[in-house]
Image (cartoon, rainbow, N blue to C red; front, side):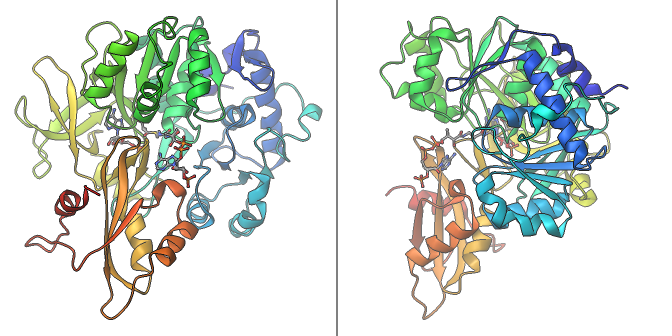
Length: 501
Ligand code: MCA
Ligand code: AMP
């Protein structure tokens, strides 16, 4: 039986005794131990009825067992669907109802809240806590150490990752075995990752960056992963002298720079710092080089495409740019109205094509058709400009999106919650520059005539429905939303007026 992704990424490590997941609070896990753990979990999945193509939704703390569940899902022929641990019940309900998983894995504390949601789609609930314990892993010792890998081809689904929609519901990006494998191989080659590397892993594992970019490349190379449960400046500074790579969002780098203990000497053993998921300010890049001697390597990707471009490993890593297309990726800039390719040097919509580009949105053929051209080019919604020597800069977005600390937030989702509050007539949510998170969320509110807005009540309503990172940091009551002649809310005007304060 062949399983395209499993056979290349996981199976080769079955007898590999070197370190895969190194932990500070528990023994390290070798590659061989990891493969065995995954096989045992694959048995649990099959005992719970997993068939090829079934979705497994996971909203659980970051543990090595969760990484093994990812591998187990692939080995059992399933489709891995991780969810941000910060999502509230209403948010999870949408994903579960849409994806209809066979199994839902959650923290034991969430069972009461999520069981009825799981029941509506006939999913079995299993648990996994921050210590790797729960009904998913309780009986692992009794399971067989090997599992007969389920056959899956390059075009079969390996993962379903949701990205929010600018105007409507979240969309599940269908990622195939080949999407994940090709990108992992391309990045491993480009960034020269080898089994001699130790990667500091402080990202969450429910998004592309921490799950695919960081873990798949490490698996590809057989590198060691220093697996941290969450981001901590102290822990990273302590790990730097024993590590060679770090992958992070820009907030990682600004927080590290804010600590005087970050020095050239401390980073002397490191060979690569990677940044992505949000724009890295050129100032941050330059300050990091001055302090440590290292040029942060910035790359650009999306949930739908994995990574598209990267600054070079050898050669100039140019601040404020995201580098050049990966070798297997075609990139072009088009006119958003006509779809024509723009003149050299002009700003255009970034479109990409290659083995990294997803298969489409889960059960949303119209959305897929809107963003994925018949010729295979995916319309990213990001606006770019290419320098004469081929470096891409992201100069804006055609999508109404805020990126806060590397998390994407679509204002529409917050506006919908705010507009449902009886005292609010209408609202506009937008981002303003923030030194820590890159952008901070602000909500401008127009109150219903004659009504009084109780900001505490409003914040309370938002808290119940939305994950913490989506909460506006400030609410501003204004008389009316500024609109252009077409009636479109001018968020840039609001941003200018309300950026200070
Ligand atoms: C935490 N909070 C946030 C964020 N993170 N608020 C806004 N934006 C955030 N990103 C909340 C906390 O709940 C807390 O609320 C308060 O803000 C301050 O928390 P703090 O302790 O400072 O946060 P933290 O726990 O240290 O987290 C910051 C973080 C984290 C380490 C930057 O957000 C993070 O790991 N971000 C990475 C996201 C990521 O992996 N993105 C990749 C997406 P309270 O005060 O109420 O307690 S993949 C992707 O984008 C594409 C494909 C790509 O190219 O990679
Ligand atoms: P996601 O929804 O998590 O797939 O986020 C993808 C979006 O993050 C892209 O469409 C970009 O807008 C943004 N992004 C990712 N990497 C970078 C980067 N290096 N610089 C600027 N924006 C980025």
